[in-house]
Amino acid sequence: MDECDEFDLPFPKFGQMMERVGADPVVALQCEAHALATAIRQCQSCRLDTSCRDWLKESAGQIGAPPAFCPNAALLMRLQGMRPPADIGRWL
Image (tube, rainbow, N blue to C red; front, side, top):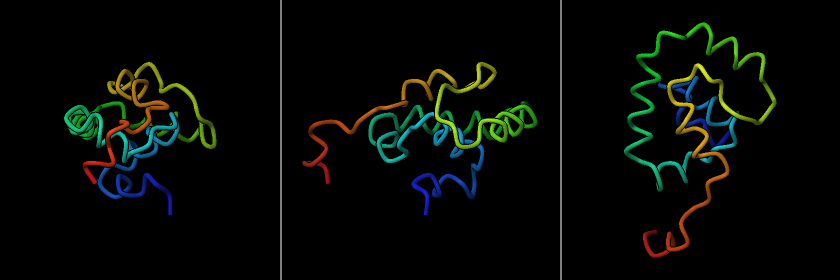
């Protein structure tokens, strides 16, 4: 099972975008929960569904930068390669 599967049922394209940029959804929730919630809402209401689907299909198997047309591109770039905070152990 893929680590982005939890986003795949309600938000298939957002989970795939996170995967394409190499973003860890668990770290994203720990470090950027509010921004992630906003990004999911933006993804749900985005009118570029066809462009997004085409880009995801063309970029299958690659890890890199999100497309410029994505309203969540800045967040996805920020999440790219983000690591859990050093003190995360005390919260678990």
